[in-house]
Image (cartoon, rainbow, N blue to C red):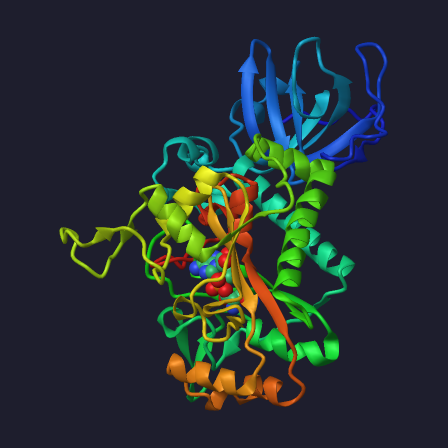
Amino acid sequence: VLDEDSSLPAAKRIRLDETEGVTLGTADKPGTRVKVLGRVHRSRTQKEVMFITLKDGYGQMQVVFGGQLIKTYAAMTLTLETSIEIKGQLRELPPKASAPLNRELHADYFRIIGAAAGDKEAITNKVQADGDNQTLLDQRHLVLRGDNASNVMKVRAAVLRAFRQAYLETRCLEVAPPSMVQTQVEGGATLFGFKYYDQEAYLTQSSQLYLETCLPSMGDVFCICPSFRAERSLTRRHLAEYMHIEAELDFITFDDLLSHLEHVICRVVDLILADPVTAAYVKDLNSKFQPPSRPFKRMKYADAIEWLNEHKIDFDDDELPEDDPQRKRPHRFGDDIAEAAERKMTDILNVPIFLTHFPAEIKAFYMSRDPADRRVTESVDVLMPNVGEIVGGSMRISDYDELMAAYKRVEIDATPYYWYTDQRKYGTSPHGGYGLGLERFLAWLCDRHTVRDCVLYPRFVNRCTP
Ligand code: 4AD
């Protein structure tokens, strides 16, 4: 290690995104001396010079080690991910060279803070390129050090900020319903149960029912809380724990609900693209991204069934054995549109779609019926190209008797739902809302193949670690 030259001026500590206002040096005129702290992201040696890309979570910077620095043992044995302090001057790049910030730091001193073991050096580069999925998931803590994985997380933080901003603008109040509950919302098949002291309880599937209870005194409300689904199937868009952005709006019509959804989605996209730092991440991850044009395409479920049949996209009845000739057949009214069929349709249409008016039988108990066609509900799924459904929403049954009949239809005991039912007894109202899966929104925005890449530490069937 070389000693620091004490004749040099004291260095100004900067983060890697704080280079504005720093005077650049030249070969014969010194600039501001700066100190940076970070980790070695990449390095390469060319003749007598070593180039390091330093990262600190805020940005990246190219650092040049020349002269005596490169001859030190510490420089010769430098491993990726080593944490390091570097002092020097920023200079312009030589002609035709490129580097982050369009600058490079000519180091006059460095000090290793924590050397990284060389054995994991491969993780952020090599494993990303050719590692198998299990290894990547086991090493998620190291994968997160890579550019793509961490940039998605940065966009995620910005998307959360943007949703909160959009809700603030529409005067929707944030509340925080409980995660531990004793009522189901979206069907018993995906409930995670656990022992709550001496009682049976579940991890919440959706905060919707609680949001509905806030309307009378708080007006329109939203929450951003984890939801939990014991999904059995391994798909690229299902997690066991995901971030659920839910809103509930009072005294509205179904059309109001659709307009609100369109507004919030477009406003969030606009806010994201208006922030240069986040917009750059999105561009990097999804160079072809175009903000959706309004109005969104609207399509009724019944028309989607026809569309699927016209395009020879069959219903796959997975209740029947694989080789049953009846298994694949044209879609019929009343069929659930499966993930694969839905995605084919969304990819062909290639625009955001409001898919509306699903039959009551395939939707949740609380959805109100369309007065014009009692077979169907005032429900909506928002479908996005490449992902499919990112939002599920509906108007809610506001009539007491109708709600009681709905519990009965799905064989839910109404007793523990007394607090939900009470909303219909004490000043009911036409109201509705929706839930949006943050990871699915991100998969669309950042063009990720799976929602697993859009969450810090994914949870899905048989994966609860790290
Ligand atoms: O369509 P879902 O099940 O609707 C509800 O839970 C309503 N109670 C929400 C409401 O009206 N307040 O789920 C809503 C959204 C889906 O469109 C999807 O984006 C996401 O939540 N989602 C999942 N995301 C990841 N993994 C899963 N297992 C998900 N299940 C639902």
